Image 1 (cartoon, chains in turn yellow, purple):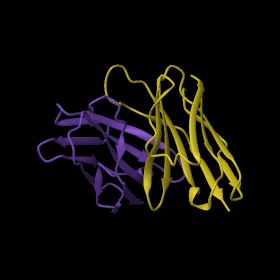
Image 2 (image 1 turned 120 degrees about the horizontal axis):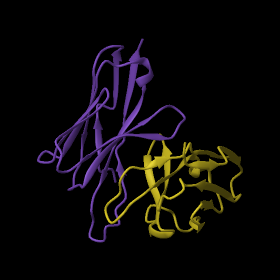
Image 3 (image 1 turned 180 degrees about the vertical axis):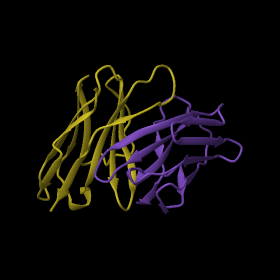
Image 4 (image 1 turned 135 degrees about the vertical axis):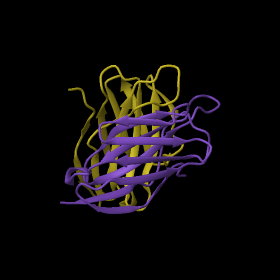
Length: 116
Length: 114
């Protein structure tokens, strides 16, 4: 049963610390998405990769956030330095897109981040 | 910005009743999808309807799409307590460069009372 995995599932850190979240997309999927979910803002798209290349990271605060795909089996989202307002659940999702707009996305279980 | 807006924001019904949720969007789309999120979990894809389709069924789910009104509805028939979750619509648009990702609405929280 293929699924998207995310680590860690929970992270508590202090303001100013670096946070790295990891995602393993479903094997064979060529698109990876990072979302952030909060009660106030709902689900926000942070970054979007296709074939490991970043297509859209306009939703991501560039001064502190960075997203990369070192290889097809790993996507990372890094926050440095972290701030209390970054507290949220971060979801990774993957999908397979062939010559068309975005189709079904498969979500991971999320990383619940708390920045004190 | 939110492309899809769900209505109502919250819905409470009794087990066995039908639940209807609506989604409105603003721009032209290629497809519209519905997702479910159980508390503390990731989103799970339920159903996808393309812009040239008007209605689609999957088990107890029925989705309609009216592109002239830019709206969609999700009907869950014979609801069960296990259907308690938040439901999100998401739209996919074919932008100039084909780079648009899904845009999610704010969700409808459904509570099914046993």
